Length: 471
Image (cartoon, rainbow, N blue to C red; front, top):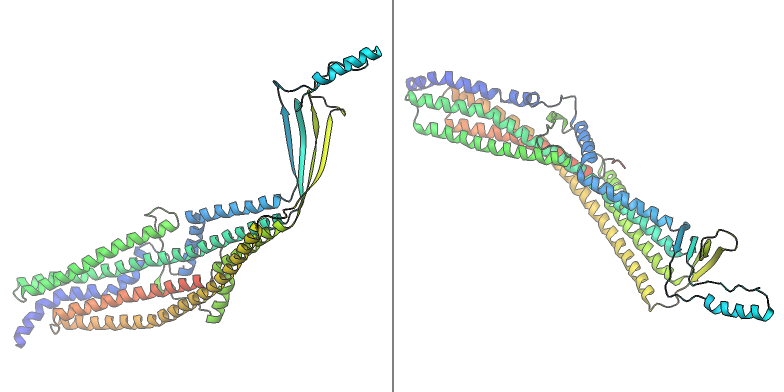
């Protein structure tokens, strides 16, 4: 029995030793893959890299550009509302040709002719031609509101609407910042997973080659080769799917920053992902309640409802405005004092009864304000829940880091021991493949756990409004 075992081990040692060497280089391949992928040096932290990508996306993202255009439109609406308080001046000119219009001279000329005959002198003109309206009328017209409370309400509503649009834009920017970071983390996760699987593939390739050699030498049965090939095929299938996910994640990330689908994406060392100083929970809650855009939006909705209520209330008050005009009019253009016309007016308007429509509009505005106040309270509770959930997720993910590192170290040590025993013929192929699978799974789990922690941190950053956004 001892003799048979020795015959099995001798041809096996030289072949399996290569597999052992390849497998032991797994950790080295995983650590050096950073340089192979053209990744930034370790001196560049994940936080600095992500900040750069976030700023790039905020400047280039098309959705944010749409939000910026909407904010400019709302800002000009405020300017328009403010302009209603200022006087307006207009130049109006008219020149007309008449046909069939009554001429006052047809009535006056015969009377003047009779008077001239009675007095025997041509003292009254008999060629008067005057039509109404006059052939031409040119004037400058000025109008200005002196008292109109509805204008104040309209201006307040425009300002509140601008603030609402601005808060929505900042909310979109904050969400985009989180989406960009999480998309980068998703891409980096798939890159690391591909590297891990690619580093494992030579081990299974060597296992297949050794199994073929053993069968040729009559030292193993065909099922050994079948298991080796099945294990390799499973890894190849997993590797192909992970590569597909990697390219999909790259395209999704580049879409957010408005870059070509195949644009290069820089990565950093995984060790910088866990460098995060976590604030205490109460500080995060206080910061979120002060800075979350959802609360600012509900505040703007309350302001809009108040402005609408003021507009509705203004219907019960009088309006006073000033109107003035100056120009020339007549049958021809004559610029002299005899043809100058000036007019100044104070116009008072007061709607005394409107079938209770104004009162109904005021009650609608009050109901809208109450609705917005309840919505704000609901938003505050939602923000608190969001922060607390994100806080708990970060705490759990931080605990998982230690567990994942322990699992990786244990699986690595176990695989190393099984490799030695397998090389010496003391372990079966099933034990070898099982240890290899456990080691690869532990390596993938460590990668996923690290990036999951970073993803939870990004979610907490968004929930607590920790990132400062540009205006």
